[in-house]
Length: 396
Ligand SMILES: Nc1nc2c(ncn2[C@@H]2O[C@H](COP(=O)(O)OP(=O)(O)OP(=O)(O)O)[C@@H](O)[C@H]2O)c(=O)[nH]1
Ligand SMILES: [Mg+2]
Image (cartoon, rainbow, N blue to C red; front, top):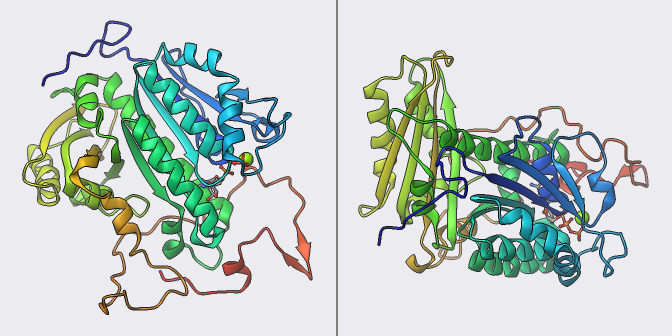
């Protein structure tokens, strides 16, 4: 069935997109999106914890100051997170009613992100916007209870969102060096997610040689309620097309291959300078085609930006249909390499280590912990993750 799409502003290149960060993790992601907000592309920071909303940033803070939490954080209480967000329902419904696309970023396992993002996604969906979530799942070392809360939250979230991009924090471990701080690892996640959202915004805001518009995006994810991949890759120099597409398929944070293999509808936006060649487009599309299932519907767009010199970038958005079976991404997650885990999987087969490019995890961080007093015990800084304090070697 062909779906008729109308932007609320009538012009498909003048869409309104809102980005909400909910809870500590979500707020960090949206805070990292510095600059570039406009009337039609706005960011909001939502947290029960007022400390998270302090500082100098461009997105608009909304303190979820509820009777349930009395101005403090939810301290892991999911129901309190939901209630706190619902106490601001009127204001949020009004914002959502203006939007064509709403991105909701949150870390699951705590109170505000899990409860609040779930309440928000229902409001956003009721308002008629296309809703795409970015959900970070906890590390295994955070414990089974937190993971169970996060999984429950994710299932609920998928029911209301059109698509969800899953970020497994556990995926950071294989790429972390002995010196990587948790703060700089989180910054990498925040920057990756914000880059993807901005790439999507640019793709829709600028008309291309072969155009992709809101209707294409909506068609690719609408009502799939499955896990999405929305990831960009870019490269310059010799072999740039191969490298850019490899960056998408083997992205260390996302399970692009698993989602693409099950996707029924995919959009690919390719952007380059005047030197973008037909052969490069062919290389990118052929590489993606090798991963996609045979029945996947592909919509490709290309745009040429004369200010770009010697660079090719692409963004891929695909959603696996939830009806297609169990979430491929979740299945794939179970085989992630975990420090301390045995070498064999239950079937006796060798555990396959992901062959993926490495992240620059050693970027110097500033982030939200910079002014916080360290928690010292027996001379150890407990804010440093145990695996780092104990000098446990992580696979590279
Ligand atoms: N990638 C990433 N994950 C984070 C970050 N902060 C927290 N997390 C993850 O997200 C989960 C939820 O944490 P928060 O977002 O701090 O929790 P919250 O929603 O503020 O919950 P309450 O404080 O209980 O209200 C954690 O278990 C972490 O695994 C972050 O900055 N980046
Ligand atoms: Mg919090």
